[in-house]
Image (cartoon, rainbow, N blue to C red; front, side, top):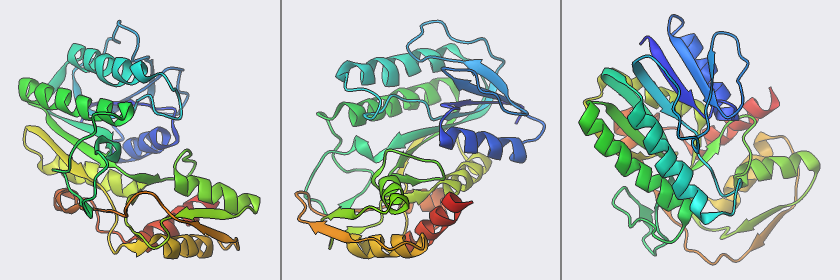
Amino acid sequence: MQNILLTGAHSPTGRAGLAWLRETFPDAVLFAASRSRVVMRGVTPVVLDLSDPAPPTLPPLDAVLHLAAVTPTMTSDREAFERINVVGAHRLFRALTYSPGAVFFNFSSLSVYAASSRPEIGEDHPKTSTEPYGASKFAFEQVLAELADERALCAISARIPVLLAPGIGSNFMSKWRDALLAGRDIVLFNPEAPFNACVWWPDLLTLIDTFRRRAATGHVACNTATTCAMPVQLVARAFCEAFGATARICCAPGVKPGQLVNSDRAHGLGLPARTVLDAITLFAEGSRS
């Protein structure tokens, strides 16, 4: 691959993705897109704001990794999710050009799903129509499916759960990490509920690499998660052990039923079948390094 675009390049996952791309494709031109200029050896910065109607001028792309999005931690403006995550992204990617068979890896979210009493979340699970962030992520998946058919792209939307990556913030496991490092208690809801809705960041890179080697044109969406689910309370205990910390674990009754994530489709496409415990251990090791 010669020309590769990564959006959301200033995020911790974006920077980790750039480092992986630079190592995996040393001869490629890496375009690092973000609202502010990315300074990193071996990459070409692209200043990009999805709310800006003027797209950047780029050569035909062989691959896209799309991480950029406005999230609930960034704004409470419900209209911003549609305006940026759907309309802005649609405008950008329709304006760009692609090499034949280009690969498009879209970082979607499990937030696309509606609340329900089903014990397991598969790709056919009902989609949300009330939660604006999740609705915007699903709407862009539909945009990408249409674009993939029109431009003969090999596209995948990976629905990401709790992402475990060094430097990551804003999810509940990163808050557990911060609480442990600060000597605070960990508070759990639904402590007995089974849990597997997390994924170790480098495993997504393995999925990207495997998918791009054997992909056919069109679009596929898949859930990502770990295997060997554990009750939330045991996950928290393993988390403390992995970080070598002691903390009081406080339990409170939950208001939502526990649900498992079915990620069989992603494993078939190349996502490693990593256990919850292994993912937590790697996250702790990466956070300490």
